[in-house]
Length: 286
Image (cartoon, rainbow, N blue to C red; front, side, top):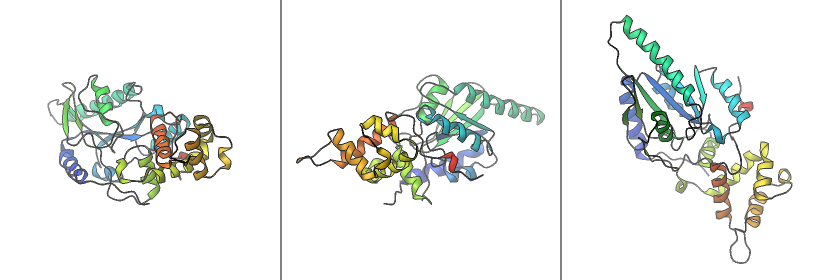
């Protein structure tokens, strides 16, 4: 099953971002730490070319820490600032503000040499749907200024937020790209809630997620769903056993695969299965 989701508001959002970029000094791009490559919009780098950028690996508290540590090394080959973060607890925010301060100081020195009066640094917050931009902004500001939600598409329009006399933030809607060249990307985005649930089959996505998890996280499946010998079972058998053990049954004791799939995806997204990453940094080529 091919997964694509690019509603009309995303086209409009990309146009607004492009229009606002000349006003922006810094871009903070949020990636999902569990899928940092799959959650990276390939159009954004070309769109913001020439702008200073900070990469934030958000939801790091839900990601495999060994994978996150390796992803930081991989991404730092291309980007100066790569910072793991948990926006809900604000862990990592000090490092983000420090990086923004470095950019601010560089900008002030450039402006001073040009004889330009000091003005606030303007920072765009960008990322895919449901990556936690609004939670990040609220943590950055220290109070609720942006609407949050656990479904994609909460933020629909650009919004400037004044932080201080030195800093303004631009909140932007979550934006995907029109076509996934690799369908594995679509499945991983769907697994972590970046794609609206109504546009894909949860059974297909859960089935595929189990396949990814079997490489490193058999124990997580075994412990959460009380299944023995997970590594020796195929994906369908695992999903079937989840339904049986969790008593997700239809009449006649038949497994309700819809409910079993939904449970697995909710457990994966929430962290109830543990800290699981689906993008493997050890498979990346230099």
